[in-house]
Image (tube, rainbow, N blue to C red):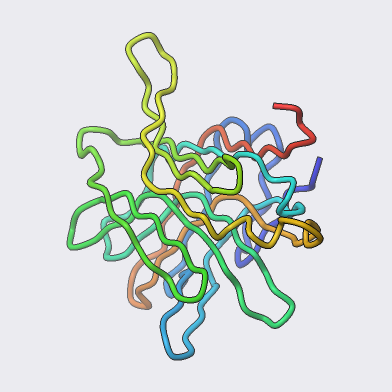
Length: 208
């Protein structure tokens, strides 16, 4: 199983037991995962992740439990990054974000440049479970809702067809980084801690 790693955080790496149960990740000010033309590419967001071959990725899931601040563009959720040798990155991120004073479910995919889709978040719920799952050569982004019988029901938010294209044929060794991130883009905002529960990243070798 790949080892857990961190980027852009000075806090200790939670233990595997904590990652699968409950842990927090701090979002200092002036941190983000974003890009915009002609040449702005930002990756300063605190990130806890596993690295694996892209072709091996199967699923990632986490519950954002508490702590997202109300300041503009505060973010927390799942991210899948494709680091490239030329220094560029393609990525997908999904989770809660604060826009115009409201919490929304934001999914952003960056192949060449980012494009974003938004879904209102239920204001009565203080937690949300997000999932990335591979289906064929597509990446499916879903919110997972609990039904009355306690089972998870997926609500598909987005389908991205470009993510696994490099893993077809002979390019199956391209690496991906998958895990949770927080972001706090304003340089004048206070730091905040986000609590996560049940982080799981699965590869094809897990047999699930």
